[in-house]
Length: 280
Image 1: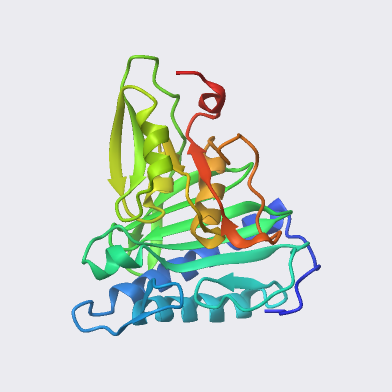
Image 2: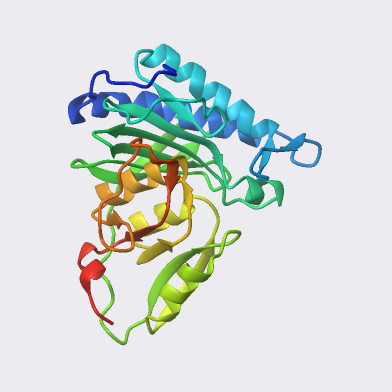
């Protein structure tokens, strides 16, 4: 990656469409590498922020990093495992990668961990791919071209089916909020609790974005800081599926701009965009 920042070319929608299959292949291969790691015997270390990193994180990151370098070497790629110093903002397209989102879930032996890969153009996620190898699923979306869910079969993704977010339930009917299994926070809980008739669906990692995009949940609020590589792929998938991702005030999120480094202070992912302005 260019450590002095990036002001290079933009990848448009047609070019992103041409990259979708090879990028999906990288996500599938990274997921296979994660699944090949013996969780009972793997090495686990703590990063500077206290979060865990395993050999599975590093194996997946290596596959994606090397694959992107071969596929499109002139585009910068920022990974959670390689957050090198950069001079922001990014003015061209770039990749945002979380090679193993939900490391705590992975270490605990659960299935809700993902490989997240996003292509950001104009500070907005354009293409997102979320792989959930233990669930055998891929969610992917290209903004303006729709979203789909695929099944992982062996070393490839097959059986693509279109997905779409659902209309928010009528007042008085139950609605589903996707909430974090391992990273709850008081503001998100207060936001949910202030709205009646809610059913909480506790999930790990970017699986929450996937369930929202396929119409299995209505909203995913995260009103506490997280990182851009945790959000970007899900942002693209939900948006492509007909939803919307904003901050708590309804403003658009901007990626790679450097106001808070690579931190997303808060976000709310809405399956039904009209719900963002609805009163309860």
